[in-house]
Length: 80
Image (cartoon, rainbow, N blue to C red; front, side, top):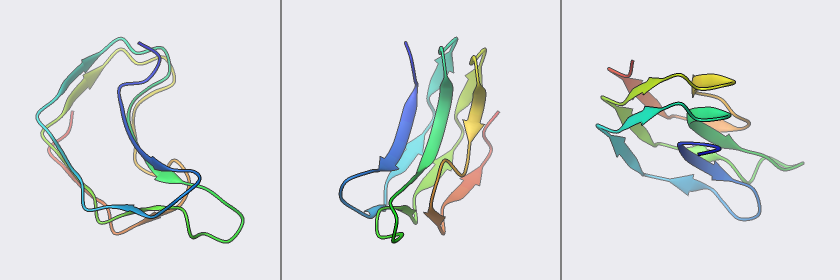
């Protein structure tokens, strides 16, 4: 798998209010769990998402990337 779970806004946004909980993600090529967004005027971003209790290991680039671009108010707790 190239990526595990991503909450990311690229063309419309924000992507908001999601709960990503209790996943086991192993050996991704790139990133296990990430959140963010991107455009020139910051309208596409991740906002008020919750990441809790996820177990991530063996990712090629990063297990967890909490700011993959523009992020507002995301909450990360108990991820390993």
